[in-house]
Length: 432
Ligand SMILES: *Cc1c(COP(=O)(O)O)cnc(C)c1O
Image (tube, rainbow, N blue to C red; front, side, top):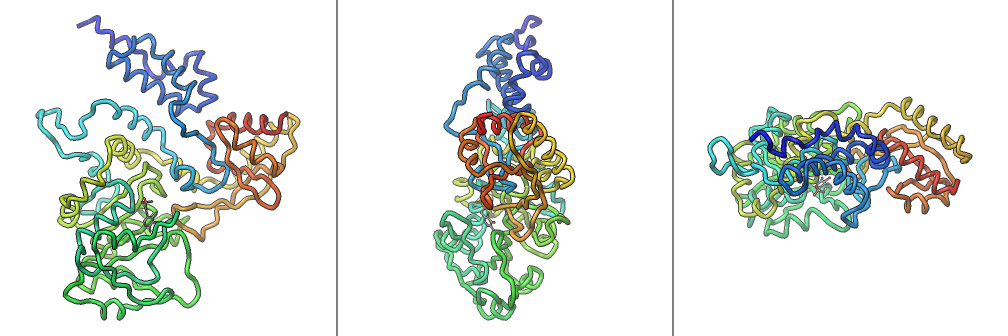
C-alpha cells in the first residue's frame, strides 16, 4: 500500500525543528517536548489522529496537564529526593516508556507468534550491566524485592539480621516489620553498634533459612562499631541476602562508602537487592541479582506475581541500564567549577533584569538514595528567604532550600535545558 497514511507521519526531529516548537521546547524542555511528539506519532500510527495533526496534537498535549502531578525543578541540591520523585528519567528512558505505552511484545515473541518470558529484555540488560551475576530479576521496588527474597528463603523459618541493621526507610516504614509480615521469623543478633561473627554463628539452628545484611543507607553509625562483612557471613553455610539499597552497580570513587552490586556478589552474597530509582537513576523498581537457581526460585514464588513490573517500567528500566549516563549520575558527578560558572551566568542574567542575587557556595547531597555522609561541593543562587513560597507556586514549581535566612537555589540538579524556566520562575517570584 503506497498511500498508507502512516507513511506521512512527520519525523520527530522535523517536528521539533518547527517554528511553533521553539517556545514549547523552551517552556517544557527538549525531553518533554520530544516525548509529546513521540506520543502524538504513536496516536497517528494507530490511526487515532491524522499524520499531519502530529505537531498540533503534541503542542496541545504540552500546553495542558493531564494529571494533578506537577512537574518541578529541583533546586534543593539533594540529588535523589524521595518527596519529589527520586531519580528523573533520562531522555532515552522517557522515549522507551512512551513507545511501550501501546501494544508491545512484553510477553510475546513476534518471530514465533508464541508467548515469551515477560521482561526478558530487562533481565538481559541487567546481566549485561553486571556480567558476574548468574541471574537477575526486577520487581516493583526495593522493599518488594526484599520481601520476595526473604519470604522465599525463610518463610516459617529464622532469618538472621544484625540489630544494627534494623532500618526504618522513611515515612514510618521499617524493614523488620515488612519482613516479618509474611511469617519470616526475624532472629536479631548482636547489638546496635557492634555485631560479631560469633553472634551470627551462635544463632544458627536447623530452622535458620538465611542471613540478611542490610546497608544502612540513610544514616551512619560511628565510634565504637563493628559489623561482619559478606565474605565472612558466607562461611555460615546459609544463603546470604544483601540489601544494598542504592543501586550502584559498580564501585564509584566519588561514593567510597557506598556498596555496589558487583563487589557484593564478588564477596559471595547469594542475592543482592537494590532500588532502581536511587543511584541507578531509573524508574521505581527493585533489582535482584544473584545465583541463577536462587533467582529462578524467587521468580516462581507466588508473591513474584503480586510485585511484578508493568511494561512501562520494564521499558524505562531497560533503557536506563542500556543507555548513557543518567541525569542522576550527571548531577552527582557535576564539576563544581562548572557549576559555579553556570550559577554566575544565571546570576548575571538575573542582575541584568534588576534582581538582587548572590552566588554562594553550597553543599549538595546524594540524598535518600545513599551515601549519607558524602558532601558534594556545589554552588547556589542566594535569594531572599521570602521567595521560597512564590518559587514553589511557579509553573513548573521551583523547590529551593531555605538556609540561614536565605533561599538557596542549587543548580546541580537543574537540567541545562531548564535554565530559562528557572530564570523565568525567579523573575516572576521577585515580581521584577
Ligand atoms: C531505599 C531502601 C529500601 C527500599 O527500597 P524502595 O525501592 O524504596 O522500596 C530498602 N532497603 C534499603 C537499604 C534502602 O536504602
